[in-house]
Length: 448
Image (cartoon, rainbow, N blue to C red):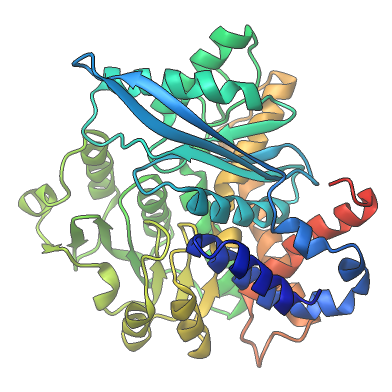
């Protein structure tokens, strides 16, 4: 079966899962030069095997709200592929969570994790539970109930979840407490724990910082520097604010952040003081618009950040947040670099548009791999019962992001995808990640 036939099969079998189909097609199309060069992949049907998860667990989560009313949510864990190591991927609590969303995220996670060079496979999970508007005790009860079901399917050497949208340090702590209670084990079964009880320094900053480290390497490949560049950031969560923070520390001017309600625009640029204020505001679930009264700037209700002139865009909110029209805005406003802080924040049409206009584009599986990389480093620290310093982890993260960049750039060149200095990071990253997993599958025969 050819790559094109494999795509047709996925589209036929999963027509009701558009996010998953989008992720599969992006990988399939870009790995074709590599796939054609290795007929052994076709012989053992590597691609067909990779698009089918090893298994999906679907379970009901019963919990009580503060009024004593029984609530019912759905939970999932998608164990996609463990060719390179234990399944690894976050848990997302959000009302938009569906099996399709988790399959797209899990499929992406296979290659993202492979790119880190660390021994971790790909998985994803979560629930359609909405933490917004819930009390502390309601979130705690839900986390306990969720882990009561999930704990059957995970362990430190089989499947190690982490946080994602709606799941931060607080939620991880509650779930880890329930896991320990049920299993009577203190292991590295979930990452993103607090420092002092198994967590790694710098895990909070890792995804945002890692994206900027990848950006630095992209700029260096074009003989440019981040200093003095104007940056648009979307989102105002963990990834967004730490990406903004690192850009500012390196001399860039960040002029936007956003949330589901609108965009905050500060023409003078954010400072560390302003970022710290935004972190505190978000931690208390208070609105971004309050910023205007304290620091100035403007609040654009219901708008996204892409209308402003800039050099760099770091979309860090959620999947498919930039459509083709918004990609045209980016190009028209002079953006030359797009670095995905979120998972698949550009639609397929948006990706095509920025690449056609030679905007340097870093896909999420490469650019935001810093989070899972430091999660894997946390697993290692748990295994030896030791902690690394912030500086040690930061240097490891810089090295990993440089290796990911250089590997993607090298594959783009090797397979004829680099055009007059324009590096196809999407094709390069997909080929590097795919080859590492595919070669392991070949070695195993047909058992994985």
